Amino acid sequence: MEVRIRDIQLQINQKEEQAELVKVINGIEMYKDMDFGGFMVIDGKSYRHCSYNIEMDILSVKPVELNEDPEELEYESDFKCPYCGNVDYDAWELEDEGETYCGACGSELEYERVVTIDYNVRPKKCAPVTRV
Ligand SMILES: [Zn+2]
Image: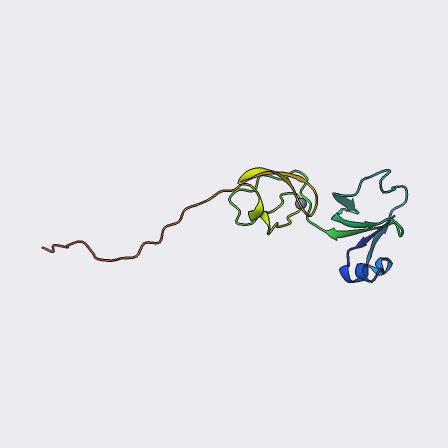
């Protein structure tokens, strides 16, 4: 199996074999030794699976900062995957709380929507002031 950096343009033109090579991996067969989806760590660098071309035996990947044992992300303004850092801009479509999968890496996530209330206060009229 060849692991290559995902290049959308080359994929569209069906020239994935020209994409930047990360590594040729012998001894690991897709759907036999591993399943599609998730991460690969190659020579200490992390990548997430993007697509797999079964005819060419090319796994297209994207470099990511993998955190295999992340802390909970609290009060973030973005819905960010704690494992791969991907931001889901469609998270507003989710229920207020529940479980979901990261659309990028496929990790399982549990979340709750936190609604905060802010106040705008404008001065209108000052109370009487007595100076002595
Ligand atoms: Zn993720």
